[in-house]
Length: 225
Image (spheres, one colour):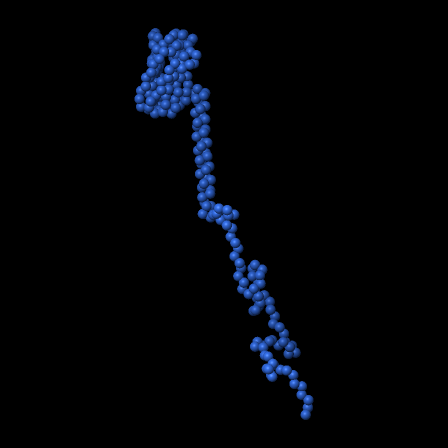
């Protein structure tokens, strides 16, 4: 009987058999299946650089908002420009008021009286004279005179003033610049005062008119020597 060479075969006498068929190459040898990106069974490379079958990308942490955070809250992004605009507007308003106050102070120091709608009449006689002035608006302060042509004469002066609103004052001055008496207005009423004043070397009676926001007013001086 001829010799027989019996070797282990798959599926015979307890040999294990692979449940998946392997591709057969040349000369009957099995070759491993080729794998690559995009091929079935190949691990998928995630955008983050990690390798895993269908691995999900981890979410990035968002910057904190609000107090202590690196970015302001989204609901405050519209409020911040509005607040800055309001602050700028308030600063401009304060600056404008300061300029108005400075201008008013300058007018007072410079002795400038701004009067709108002024009408003045002067009448002189051997025993004195009178001056009457009416106006629509007045602001500031200035010195005025009534010339009697009688140097150093002592005169009795009566002052009458009235104003609808604001403040108005008429101050009678002595030759040395001191104040003899002052007549101050009361809105909506007529105020009268009198006193003794001496004329200067040029025979002039000096008086100062001061107004602060005075509207629709008038003042009169009656001088008797």
